[in-house]
Length: 288
Ligand code: AMP
Image (cartoon, rainbow, N blue to C red; front, side, top):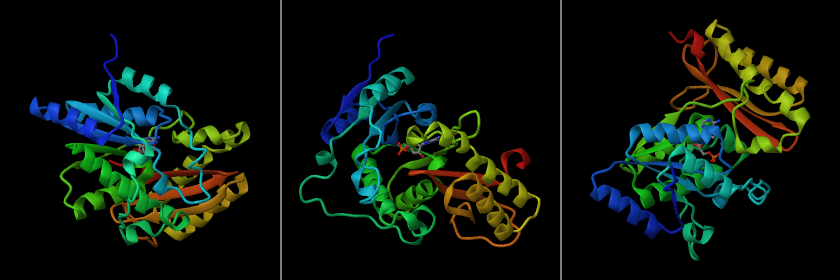
């Protein structure tokens, strides 16, 4: 069957499509992405399709969430490839605005979320979550969907978006989607293409290590002890560790001692590539 996927580049065109669906009584879900799509993104689309009659996927590499020395210019971009994947996977509409459409001359507003954005990835990337919150707020107001789907891969981001929607009374249900992984456990990421073959071999150790932390914590080991062991293992394998942390899964408050319910989160560099990952405590196998 021929794909009926349409791409729009302006907020007016996006709103016109959504208005037509609304008139027909259809519900709408939004999946925000920065493109270079992989199966993780497509799993978000599948979840969105199960929730709503129509799904909009946005593709926008958002400059305000990148630091001055980060990879905004080099971030992988493949619009034709993305559109082919989205057509096949059954998206209804792609919103792929130019930067000037999202941030026209004179744009000034920046949303700050406070302490939720200060630790973990926010510590290494000082204005990152202000940029994320701002662009997500814009996308939610431009599209006005019933649901918006975000991956647990970016766990802190998911909580930031939930906080944003709560604080600003944005009428949308934020849906979290599980992390899609390679067979060896590496979380799919658009940035994995940066890894050399040697780094790619080491990369799954990040997931393995934080999974071991989760298992140890479930057996009663203290947080500090488990985190020190994990950092040691990652350092020895050639990672440059940014953080390994055990946090409250709802508030990201730091936890100490033995814990019952938590999230283990980590960020570590292999060469110039920053990998992030997270797992729940108790781990899924011991969840019941
Ligand atoms: P990005 O294009 O990297 O901004 O990601 C767009 C959305 O896809 C975000 O909500 C991410 O959390 C989500 N995502 C990225 N990688 C994965 C993955 N491996 N599994 C599930 N969701 C993912």
